[in-house]
Length: 170
Image (cartoon, rainbow, N blue to C red; front, side):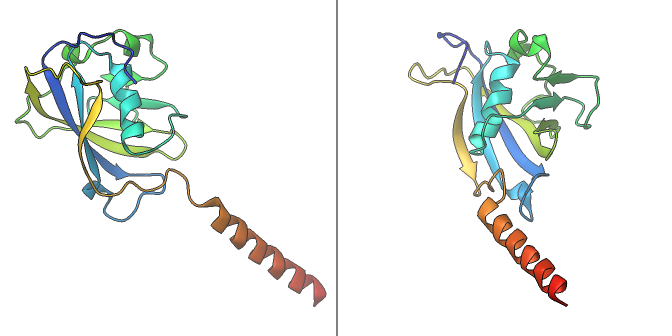
């Protein structure tokens, strides 16, 4: 998944990525999270691509980071279309320290608007020479499907069509 060639440089950043809602999120989505490690010399785009994959989503939509934590705030934002996402490395982001409680916002799929809170958990000087960063190192909760079960929708539409036919007979 990485586009940054090894060797990876320390520190290794561990981000906790919590599902906040949107799309077809279940009740209490905040209880679903993934810890993602990424090297200091990897670019923002690699973290942006790693998040949907960590939740078993397809990587087929646009995404953006909002470092202010406010959706659609252009100040401190990194969008998949920005050339900077392939240039700015993780160590250059204005991140709060690991002991801070500040989260920044990540939005995936601008139609369904899956919202995720991203918080720096820790940094480490230990680089695993066998690792392929970014990587998921911990997870909690089962990720919901990115899209609802279309078979169920088809059945519902079929039922509604049956109702329309019944009305026509009256």
